[in-house]
Image (cartoon, rainbow, N blue to C red; front, side, top):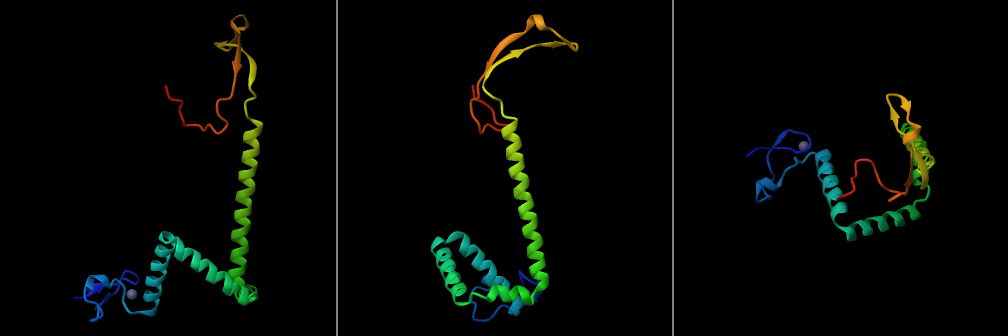
Length: 150
Ligand SMILES: [Zn+2]
């Protein structure tokens, strides 16, 4: 029974050693086998904290043994290095923008205290009906769209 490879989309015959042919979802093409392993590892990293910690430790050890690897990799792959720099510039810009927006939010924060509330009727300020109101802040993290319950 032919199957369709989940990676390249081509038809293939499952390996005879695979008892349940439905288990084999990738053809034997090396690129498709790499895709299968990548997918397996991604799922394993997401679901298994022990595996994740072991992988991080192995990577740290490898990096300590090969301290110049990434420096040399960037020298050999100039396009990769430039793309990385560009992406980092974008991340930095986004971070600066978020910091700026946070600063603006702080400036526009309502200061608790007493305020004069003057009604405007048909564009005319009705000073006679003004009220003195007290405004207090209930919650600093209160976001638009959230509602106070009854
Ligand atoms: Zn394939």
